[in-house]
Length: 231
Image (cartoon, rainbow, N blue to C red):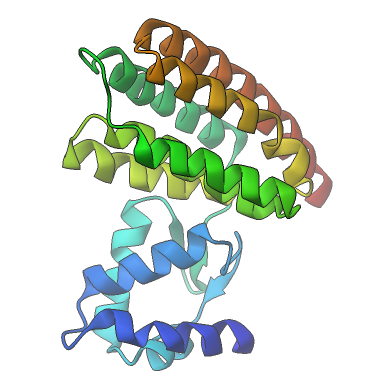
């Protein structure tokens, strides 16, 4: 935890002059999504508050916000912990992804579409693969789907899926073979991008549906085995 807190102290500059709970929760959400605080980690009020230079009340409010987003859990007389997902949680995350992401693609309207950010996420994934950075590939994969959702041009949808993707990362951080989990989907991301570049949103939606179904099966398989082994 000491090493984590030292790194977290560098995030003070992100708080600006006013240390609000929302800004603190943004920092902690990003750190949790990056695996900085793995699932099951107890978060120290004194340590994190000292590292960020914020009051106990501000930090508790940030914890409350992230608990509402299902990223943290409060255990009576024990403290606040990064949440460990159940298999049912993972299945529900993918149910939400299918409802939202497929609807975004279906509702895109007439081409051409603004796909530069989507293409950049594919390039990011290719670079991570060349560097054999499998966690980086997982991050690029999340970026691809985040940018896909952003095509809807809806701040509310972006906010909803930001929390969903952060929660999904909790499952990714438990998996012990990120290459096997993420590598097969780089090609599929590229195929979805190519379908959208060709203006064929129907084909893009079909590819996305198959992608999400296959990804759910793979994630549940490896996650269930990993969590079962730890139990």
